[in-house]
Image 1: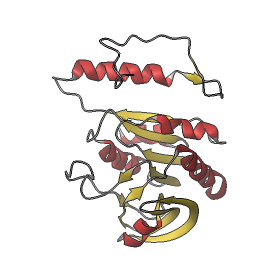
Image 2: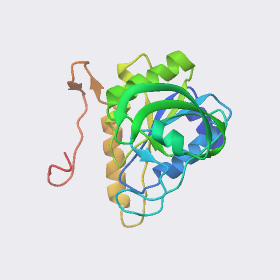
Image 3: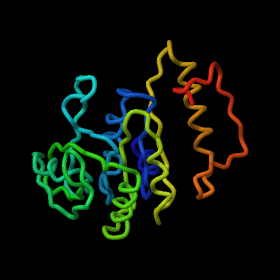
Image 4: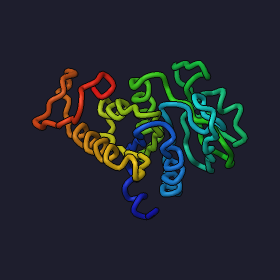
Length: 216
């Protein structure tokens, strides 16, 4: 499985998205990191990852153990609080409530909280810097809840179009709704932008039930 996963991830920008919170995105993120170990790669998030407790629900979360020679995107405050040894590579003029966005290289293994930038445009800038200035082609970006708009960020730069992996928890009770979610994500992934913000698609998709604001 790891060998197949490495072929899927290498030399690509890959976003890990999920159907909802606590479906295992960060757990899969850590598995994917192991699959690309040995390659020159970058780790990032669009939210906050690696904290001991979920900021919303308070439940325990899997930590992120960064390894030697990995490149990471997070804030300067998180670099200073990490127990890993890190070399600051670049600091960007993007501020968050948790500090300024930075790229660092790991010199010695340790745990680290990843913090994402405040917008898709900032993410695009950081990813393009990593490719053009650091010669990094393999990038892994952890998602946040069910946000998927960040996938389009790479298409606004010189990067190749991003791919994504959709993570969800399937049980006997939710198998039908899970299939519906996968169908919807598949149809959305085929939509094309005409570069003017208008979505062009020749396909139609049937949404069962009432067209509520949440569903739309």
